Image (tube, rainbow, N blue to C red; front, side):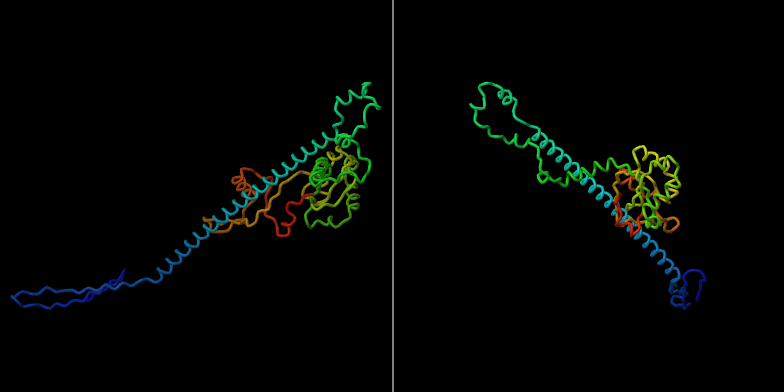
Amino acid sequence: MAVSLDVGPTITVHGDASTSRRSGRVRKPTAKVRVVEQVSYQDNAELKDEINKLSNLVQDLLRRDAEREQFLKDCLKKIESLERELQEEKQQSDRHQRGLARSMHAVSTGPSESALSLQGHPLHTAQNQPTPVPSYAAVASQPLNRKQDKPKLTKQAAKQARNQAASKDLRVFARLPPDNPLRNERAYDIYAFVRENLSPQAREALKGIDHVKTGLALLPSSADGAKALLENREQIAALLQAQAVEQRDTWIRAYIANVPCTRHCLITNTELEITTEELLEEIQIVTKLKPEKAYFSRKDEVEKLGRTP
């Protein structure tokens, strides 16, 4: 007897109906059952594909977590480096100021008051007193007349002088894109072109234009002239096709390598570009400070990063 099932595993039943006449009883039929399972290879292939997809997804998530962790570590290292540099500059400036104060005190120190009071006393006349030996303070207080005796400025003093000059810088900078044609023009031609198109008040405030690494530097005639140029910054930016028109400011610019510019969306299974807002928010979470701006730089811009006029 054979029974065949259409759905599910096939079960084949083999049996015989032999009888036993012993004791006059009929032997019940016995059945030998063999189950044959047919495995669906198509279902196994689909299951393997799903397992591979899940495995790839987990590996991608782990890789992105590692990249994010490395990005945060790089941010922290860069911030610590900048803080150390600022602290060192502050300490050097303090040491230089203390040394300068000691030098000024030594130069200004002359003979003591008691010695000056005894000079007019009759007992202390020129014939009774030997020729006084000049002291170190008296020699140091004498002015230096020869040019070759003037001390040279140290590196710290020169740096401080540059910082003081930068603090009085009245120039107005126009930041130009790298492909702006005005970068290849002569400064005087640009100056004449700008003067022809400015208002009379702004025209009087502008006395010249120079080329700088970031674009152009507009030279005002005075502090009021710099204000007049800044009031007409929109017109100047339109004339020069500049990205920004602003005065000099001290910026700390940091370049962080190996920052991913895309992220994987698990819902749509697509790659999404990281926006500037997301980048600023992530930096603020890590450093507790919000940068003024952040962007992904090009390869040719990396060498120029951090260089300001």
